[in-house]
Length: 372
Picture 1 (tube, helix red, strand yellow):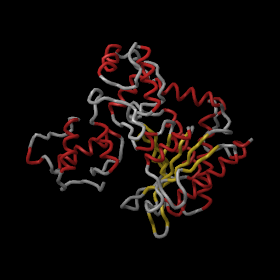
Picture 2 (cartoon, rainbow, N blue to C red; picture 1 turned 90 degrees about the horizontal axis):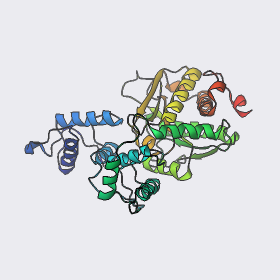
Picture 3 (cartoon, rainbow, N blue to C red; picture 1 turned 90 degrees about the vertical axis):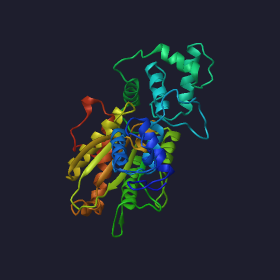
Picture 4 (cartoon, rainbow, N blue to C red; picture 1 turned 120 degrees about the vertical axis):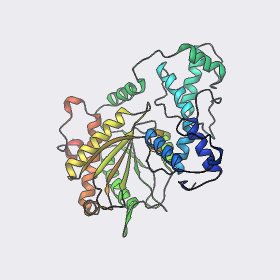
């Protein structure tokens, strides 16, 4: 869909306003404005985007519309079941997943997708509670969940599971499964400056990082080739299908002004589906890259972007500077800088798996030491 913005009107706007009103973000009682994208609608959209952890621009594009659609569902609004050809998505699914997690059923993360793992966990709950284990969340299952109530207060079991999985996998990178995601691609070049494109730069850096990881025995996959692209949903599904341990997504930023510059890293955050291992990896990547490149530190941030939320393993998105910046651009075009970025990301991944006592200071670990 195209971006819907202030001044637009029609049935899509009416649907957007209705969803915003159902979440208490917009007063939609004036029938004359029911299909008008006015100032109040834009303010409500910005509020929703900020609360959801997605880019705040006041437009309703594909990502924001999908997030609105998911967010307006409440547990009990509909019957939930696993439909392999059309997976149910929504905050009602995430609420169900969180309750199952709190009751001790392992579904990895409350990502709001009713997949096979969620169906299996629901069937286990139904069996344990004496219900028909059909994997369908209908009235009887909802009553059982409400009767049990919350048994765990102040904890998030999925975070402990992530930590245990990393600790149990050991410090060696050999055999780890890592998906590298060079952003955009194909007919979507991303940020451009002359013949330079975001898609081309991140493909080159991802290829350099792939070679270094493979040399250490890491099993690596790229989410796209040099001239094609996938949607973020497809990239997340790809990582989930191969059972990756980590996802590293690489992007370049841009701005209308030449003044913004520097590095930033993002992890799944802002709600109960946050990944603490993702936050740890984002922090390590950010500190290693800043220390090695000297670029401005724009820090790490939790976001609700599709690729970060939909992956069942920790995922990090790194914005490797601004192509529109006269400060960052010369570095981004330099092959030595790209090698430095690849090395910094490799070291960040290695440090994630090292015990605290063996974790070296930022900026000192080198590839030969990692390989030894």
